[in-house]
Image (cartoon, rainbow, N blue to C red; front, side, top):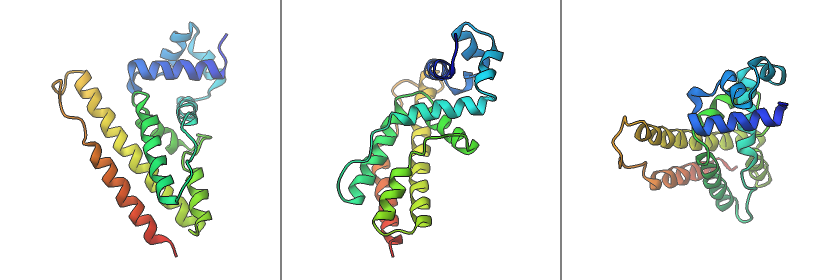
Length: 183
């Protein structure tokens, strides 16, 4: 029998195996051996299912570390990137699910709280954390797209991945900009 948890788990399996483009209610239903209406009974739309999968992916991200805000936020951004890289097309999926407003997990909630505790206004903390999430999502989406292009033969095997230093540089830029917002 299919329930919300087993459906979300099957959707994550389909995502990892086939990619976001092939993640459909019909494919998830087939994976579970049920008909698509069973999926719609638990998730009224594909957007709702994608949000559940995004919540599942982000729910496994580590908690904030201890230390000064800059070190904590840097580690959080690196952990978020690592979490997204564990699932095929996760950055694209999380971006789409975030846009729907249906997710229950906010990957930036702890950072917003941390920045407010350090003296940022609520709005500055939210916007700063949102910029950080969008940077990580965009960077990982490009990394995952390049991997997919190599995997499907569009790019030759051995094509250089994105330079990991580019991610670190972007993190440093965002942290410097965030520090300049502090009153």
